[in-house]
Length: 415
Image (cartoon, rainbow, N blue to C red; front, side):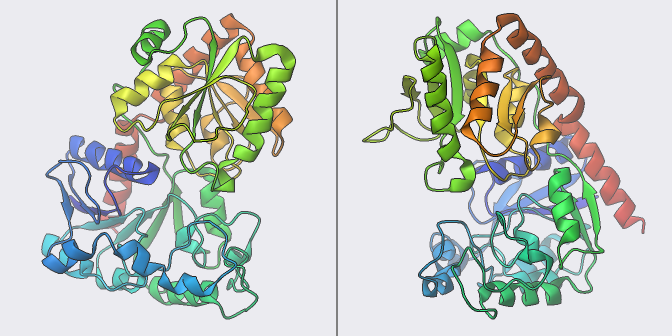
């Protein structure tokens, strides 16, 4: 079996890491998997970039060029909105590699023009990492449900017109998806349900296969040792938070997380707990969060991330809409209980009061209660840690995900 996996990047970003892990898992299972990307950051020879001088010369400009049309929407919100309208040479690449299956993942940022999909003439499996495949251009719709119809008057664009880019996008996608051999995979039950109710994927075959990770790389290590490596205090409870784009993108929920920490401080935790932030450097004028904060910057490799998760008593992800976040899965694999809102794919990962806490959306109080509940009892924290690790071993091992995809591919090819 020969597959060609398409993703904008190989290891940069959550979707890229999930796609790359599956690529390596399929290879380990004996599948001849090749990964085609626009932006290659690693040195894996099985990951290739688009060929040709023009492709190499324009790679840095394609994301900006692909979003030029959005400049006309002066009231656009600061969210990712993709048009996928730039010409590409990927149809030729697919023909050269001649795969049995074309496996799409996250293909925005000017990587792939929508209409190119029709040129593949192969069975296509599309693993969704957000909602973009079935919306008019947004990657997460928020409160908007216009993707169940033809979109238009897009609230993310600040548009007052029915015939805006979002409706144009829906009509383009309808033509592209109309009569191709397409199977949709959603990593979470929530995303599968949203896809089923959409205009574009209603009636399509939609499977749920969770993402996976290498549970040998992401595994618990001694907490004291992890803290010593990172120069973190041994005598405090540590609350871990990933801050990449958290202030700009309201979907990340920082506007709930900050008040939750201040509530904890008011309840007496300022002397017992500290915040550890990764994903960004310390801001010039850091906000007062009630707890002392240590900023560790970006962590790129799996081993460093595993050390970081192992050092924490609790990991908090306050997103208001999300699929199946890698960071939650990674933290649980390292035995770190997690606190999040009961939204999206979070219930697929966190079992309330078993390996973490699911707060009712949306409010700072529920998050604060969850963090305190995880931290206040040392023995409970140890039990949560054991169950967190066990859940990942049983449900999110990358080898299990690879076997599920192999079964799916085999069934598709056998007709």
